[in-house]
Image (cartoon, rainbow, N blue to C red; front, side):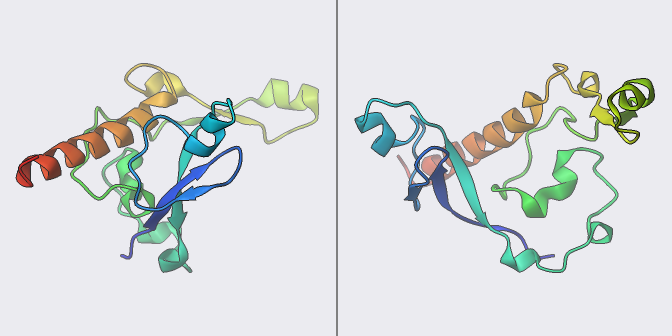
Amino acid sequence: MSAARVVGLECLRCSALFEGAAIFTGCPRCRDRGVAASLSVKLDLSPLHGLTTDAFPATPRSLWRYRALMPVTAHPVSLGEGATPLVHLERLGRRLGFPRLYAKDESQNPTWSYKDRLCSVAVTHAVWRARRRRRAGR
């Protein structure tokens, strides 16, 4: 299966793109203007064109099942994040006029937070960078 390609880091506020940069302090352009702004990984998803859910493996039952969509290629550091169930909120949905209203049950994650997914990807990337730097003798 092909994988998404990291294009760079994109500012969520001004849309500036930083290619190949390892910036961990937010957008430098916005920071120069006195505004804090986060960066997001911008991916080229064109290699995945036509991909269906059938193409993903059944295991692991975690966010790493979708590794082809991730901005990291290293061996995952994981406590089993993801694969949290959708819970049908039937009564609330009926009351609000949304008969198919669902919510994710994040209590199935290690710390009961949706942030566990982000942390798994971030720690995996940090471990990969540390190993790469060690091999390069830095």
